[in-house]
Image (cartoon, rainbow, N blue to C red; front, side, top):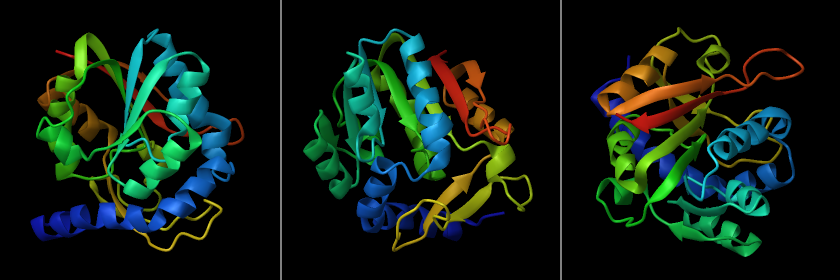
Length: 228
């Protein structure tokens, strides 16, 4: 079980780590080195978003911007925001609409726009930061809008650890590029995710578990939420 000191240390490490890893991450995504994304999860998040027939999608934690470009290719207007300046620069260089903004900016109400769909694709990494972000996302959605989250599936991502909430370390095994810095992320059980949605004012409308065609195991879990 993590302590308050652990939580603070790990939260403060997430963004600097991603700043150091921005170049490697961009090349891993664009060169197709991450098998689960290539075979399953990229298509899965696109399918869920398109099922809602969106007019305007806000991609929170957009990284190097692939999802915004994929939606634009399907004639869906999309905007990506990220707190890592190098990732935003990479995204803009490849084309599309991107802004530099952190979750703290969103929590403070400094991102003044509304979309009919907000997406977080493997971008909810912290503990306290995510818990504070969740209710704030409602201010970015039009009435009746959807909040779509794709994240690691606890069944697979748990590894050899006990099935309980806690901080984990991403060492980038199998990501194909030389990542200079490990990155902390906060593991949640399925029950913890659902409890977080409930206390943040969200109704879980749908949950999908995209399966890897080779292993038959979940490659991710996708939650579709609406405001209660």
